[in-house]
Length: 171
Image (cartoon, rainbow, N blue to C red; front, side):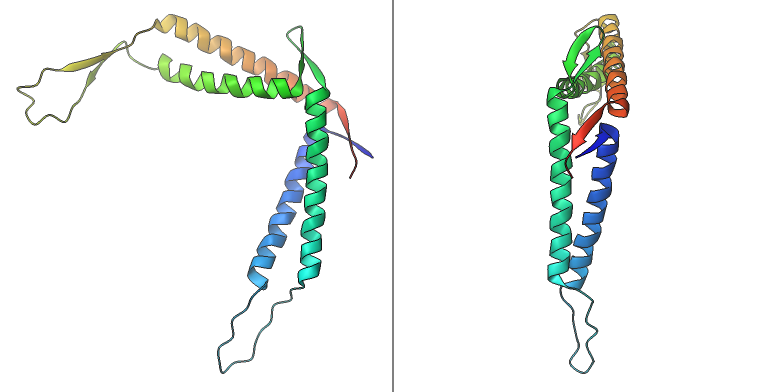
């Protein structure tokens, strides 16, 4: 059993996944070879059993670390603005807020009235069309700031947890 922070565990997973990508690429390039009729073969150094074992071991380690992270995320609680929240709830809430923030960001950038350009054949006979917003820009701006502020608060709490709290990983 090894103790590590969530931040370290995530970096370890990334490193293991890079190693796995290396071995998969190696296997992809070495498992077959082509020889012309009148030439001597240049056979790549490839041993299926060794490569398969390395990939399987990397997969086992990745799964073990991810499982430990998932358990910690589901059970660990973090104080956010005076409330206790599980890490997985924080992650879900952050995803929701990021989606809402993107929508509010688009809305706050709209002009109250925008002239539309159409595909008319004759500009002389078609009346101009306008698109109007159907909301209060000031309210959308306040909501955008509130969402941004909540996201920052959640992110800071999560960063503190990821950098300080130790989780058990049975590698």
